[in-house]
Length: 147
Image (cartoon, rainbow, N blue to C red; front, side, top):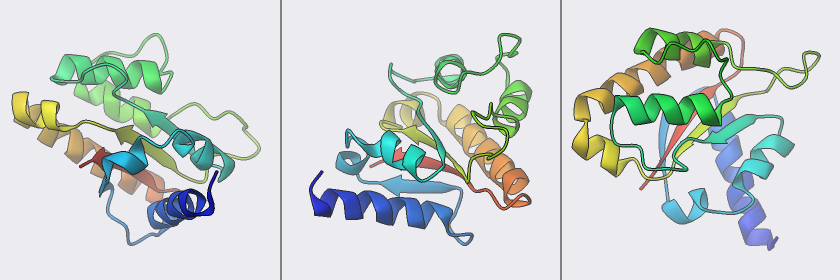
């Protein structure tokens, strides 16, 4: 990976880790499309997942996408309360070393924003709530939105 790409990914991860960083960040689409993005987060000790591998345009498609990308348990309820619970208790690959932080990546949020603005607003509120829960443990929770 060229040095400039590595430094851009490292800078993004540092920004996500900063306690003063808001829960939701707008990131350039080319950076979010970088093939090493998820691997870079994992190397830094973070949980990271791309939410919109398929189009996300309303509450149902958003909840299904998060369920799949975050490997939420089979009993996930597919409602907003279940989303708060699921994101607040994401599976940890190594119980001795929980993730340093969490990053959900929504590469193309415009479709959801346009077709279901109330669902999008509720989702952003949930992200802020979950971030506040993890912040108490010193682990940030970030939503990266493509612009």
